[in-house]
Image (cartoon, rainbow, N blue to C red; front, side, top):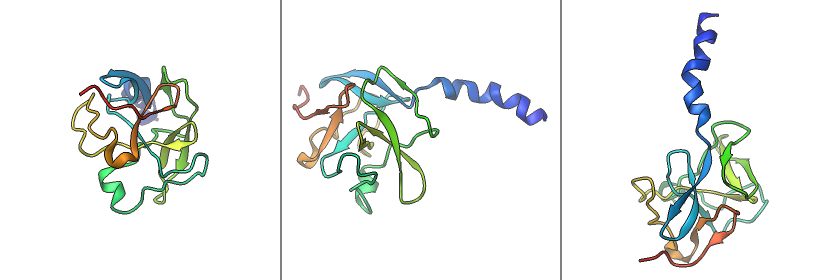
Length: 137
């Protein structure tokens, strides 16, 4: 019993952080995780397929954005947020039926170095649209 009474105090700050939220970038408003890291769509994924086309070595460069719970929380994201189950049984976040990923080369909040990589990786707009325009460099 003592453990359960102290748990809400330690987990409250984590629960207050949204799984996905909005941040400003040189590409305009984008979807980021609770720590401000940019998330991306992979154009080879099939909307509402329930699976990710990024497997094997792809996942080393583009790790899945995982949900903290079965009911992801969002702040400012107007696209439909859900989850799919990864091959190892985790919950990968989706926006408008498309899985989202991190880019391993993004080192700090606000980095968008994955934008347009290979012509198949793109930032996610708050509406869930894919941002295919070049970033402002």
